[in-house]
Amino acid sequence: MSGQKLILDSFYSAFELLVKTTKKTVNSINETPSQLVKFCNTIQNAKENRIHLVGMGRSGKVGMLFGEMLKNIGYEVSYLGKSLAKPVRTNDVVIGVTGSGWTNFTTKAIQNAILRKAKILVITGDEKSLAARLADSIMVIPRGYVKTGSLESSSTGKVASGAPLTPLGTLFEMTTMAIGFGIVSGLREDSNVRGFNEGINRVLNAADLTLNNIKANETPLQQFINSLEPFSLHPENNLFIFGSGLDSIIASISSIRLSHLGIHVKSTYDWRFRKKRDLLISISGSGVSSRTLERVRSAKSSNMKILGLTSFPESVLAKACNILLVIEGRHEEVSADFRQISDMSFFIPSFEYAAAITLDSCVAQIASNLGITEESMRAEHANIE
Image (cartoon, rainbow, N blue to C red; front, side, top):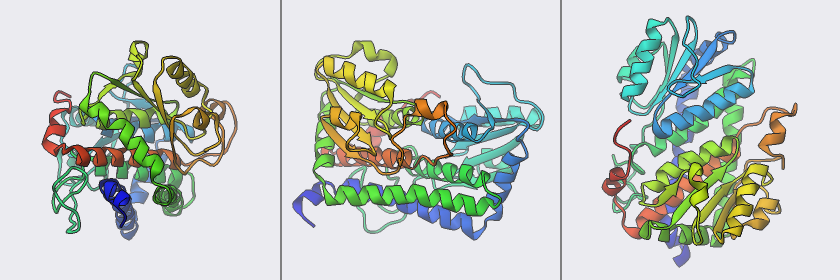
């Protein structure tokens, strides 16, 4: 291994472990497909009712990705706890996303939904948890505790037997994201299992291609990490992450993890407070999203540095960025705005999954470079939810 590859060792360890965990979970689901079929059937039987998603933190954001994809195939979806949440009624379906299975808000919402005679589905990492025991059907996802003798415990990105990849559920969240996309693909097919695997294969293929591309040319990734790293050491500078459509949810998911490094990640509501030497990460699978490009233009006028993630290296976004990571998965250079008003065919958000695990793996590398421990990252996490 070259000296440069050693510098990115934690990135590769994290990325490969995230993909490996998703693949192992898929294999486990396929060994007992009745669980998947029951999960899908419960959703399909609620076509005339409403689907409600509930979860907190990054688990809640992953649930929102799942919900937005359900909307794309014709389901009415509501998010419990949000300002526009709809009432839960008899025969509605409530889907809880909770790695621990004990998250207070999520379990309380599930209990209240049971009183209203709703069907309960739960995606969790603990089949013996309260949320799992309350559910009509569960999908079990690894929570972030893995056994591997090849990785060290000296940093967040290199994990030992029984230690989390990064704190607070990265493996659960990233695996759940992929499994959710697979489930939605399965809902569209006569065979839920066949459709699930077709969708999952597209997601995993994009991740594998992205990693291969990075290994073939590490320079953009190294520059990307080198640009982010000082923001952990100098929190007086701000980081903004922006995307539109599904990419906005990926931006939010990544914002939470990056903030655990001590980086001062600002909400998009605080865009008016941007200043020179702040940093913008722009996420756009198509590279032509009008809302994302608007932020890029205003960032340039404020003398901010711009990092980008897209599938199209010749797109408008790509050409506007100071540093670009090419993430596989999007096959049409069409923005979310156009897709919403067109009759374009259903698509699997392969780009979104590959972008999310790329950014999470960057967090692992920065933590390793700076000696940031899991304990200090936990100290940066919200403690009242």
